[in-house]
Length: 229
Image (tube, rainbow, N blue to C red; front, side):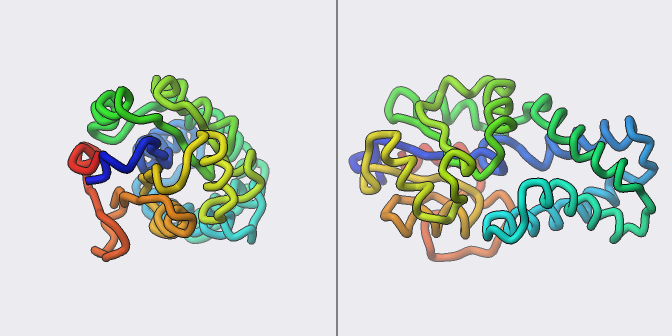
């Protein structure tokens, strides 16, 4: 469908290629135990997942800092669960979480297959709001760094998706144009609307079972990318 137009494909990383929720759950299973925090993992994750998404939205909107994000999302979860925990333990959990998260390397089903399919045909890149040191480790540990020419993150750009400046930086670094590019990501706000605002074609990977929409084509499995590229 876009084969004749597109030369460069930009991916989001977390929730799109890299299975954030699965890797995050494995990380919390480890660090809660190591820090002797006696909460049920399922109960913790049920609260944490939406809280984390909400704090990342605040972070995108410049309403919380990186350090506030890391602390407040955990504090909010423990307060919601009515589990008493010291600030020192929360700080240690925040440190351990970042340290261990990238040691788990589960990708979404068909991620490697579709990267192998796309690599000979297109230049592939990453645009991520994640923190630079963590995202690089994720890419390397998951053995997918070599697929991507440019990896653009929000710390490098000075702004976060959906700000048009991060997409424009990515296009410039990739030496391509918006009309020749496609963005594939899970966030309608950050990835899809952000990319479309600068004229980039989009494909929404609906990782969160969000309602159907007419903004762009929707896929539920990464293997469906082959229908469009």
